[in-house]
Length: 290
View 1 (cartoon, helix red, strand yellow):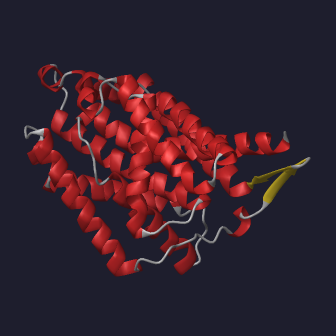
View 2 (cartoon, rainbow, N blue to C red; view 1 turned 180 degrees about the vertical axis):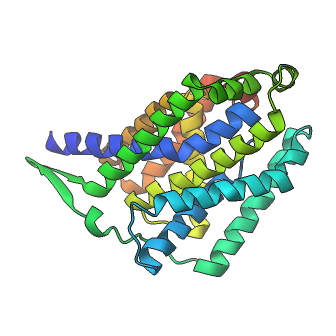
View 3 (cartoon, helix red, strand yellow; view 1 turned 60 degrees about the vertical axis):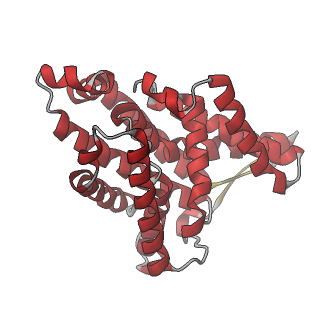
């Protein structure tokens, strides 16, 4: 029984991180209709930059999350100004090819700077364990899940309770009508894109608190992010969080029932089932709104 409870707690905390990992992808899909294949490359690049700050420069692991997110936001603004704004009226395949190219570029740069070695962030004072009876809960997972929860709740209230959030939701519904009523869709799109890239990098920082990583394994996390988005849809940050928790619990519980090497196969099977049940896939995402 303790083993099951331990797995459920670990799964819920890990799933909270998965929600943060997927939110940037969900935002860009829901508002800008962009299938960002570079999402996982940005995520791992953010994790590597975070690793450099913490391990390389010996800086505080909590305080370094904000600089990584800010750098990613500025990078996103630059990518939008230089590339993305010219893809607005292009076909989906052209957009996906452009972001596939960006993924390859980011992966290559990451390998040149940090090599292909697997990295682990030095947790320092976050490396402890909370003991409750026979249960052992890693402090790093609690902190990562808590930070993710705060960010997603803040994003939820921003999108639903502010004028800018209303403008973003209006643009997600109909870009042309939003422009007709006075919303500067170009400027807002640039900021949303920057926020999506920043959230991807944020996902990388919290992921690095609970897992090791390397530049070449980012496609694994892209599959995880798509799974969370498909399960949670594009309706809200809260549904993304709930879907992430569901995936995390599924992963840990399945790990108890079948050998470890088959866990990923079960998750990919869940992704396939989710696509079949939704009966929409990525092509149906255009019908959903943030």
